[in-house]
Image 1 (cartoon, rainbow, N blue to C red):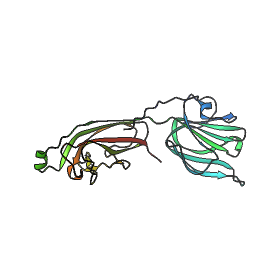
Image 2 (image 1 turned 180 degrees about the vertical axis):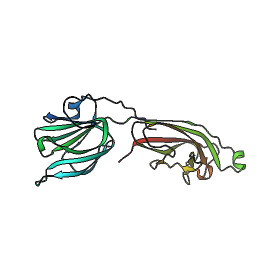
Image 3 (image 1 turned 60 degrees about the horizontal axis):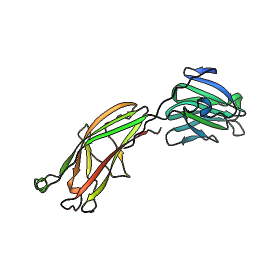
Image 4 (image 1 turned 90 degrees about the vertical axis):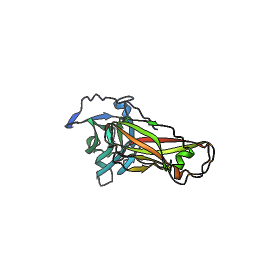
Length: 260
């Protein structure tokens, strides 16, 4: 289970020229960084030299397109989009930079330029890392007896998996399992033995790490959601097991910001 908790900072926008609703631009002399705008408030993605297409730092994914260039190849302006909201974009050119403040934070912008038409030397995106939190609970132990097997049971219940996800951005939820042979035979499994049941009634196989699959039912949109999943083990896929074998299964749920 990955548990990510971050905090959000608020930006006080001052001065500058209002371009349109929610966007303000201010010229800052020198070579400003995100800490120049607000010390300790933001993470930053710097693209130096500027390039078209996708750039990322593992959290923020930015696409730069519609680039307008001078005859010598220097950039004049560009548009951008991102997977999570951006608070400030710094566009450096010549002895200063234009700071584009987005209030509220935005996932795109148009026609960004350096001051006074200078060629763009680099671009810096300032953002608050998304808040993402996941809680997993509810599974139980299962003892398989000879009587249980003689009754013709193929599946054993591992209880109800309860998953709660809180996210401030669009996300993807994934699930996988790991296991440890605590005692007994080390015979390999003949397939992935764990599966969970979605709200639709469909059973989905849970793959072993490093594979994973999308966790069903979650919308992937910002907010808080909770879902419950019956989880079972397919006894026919456990391989050649002996009496007294103990296997520890761990079901992992991860959540990550969606790429654009």
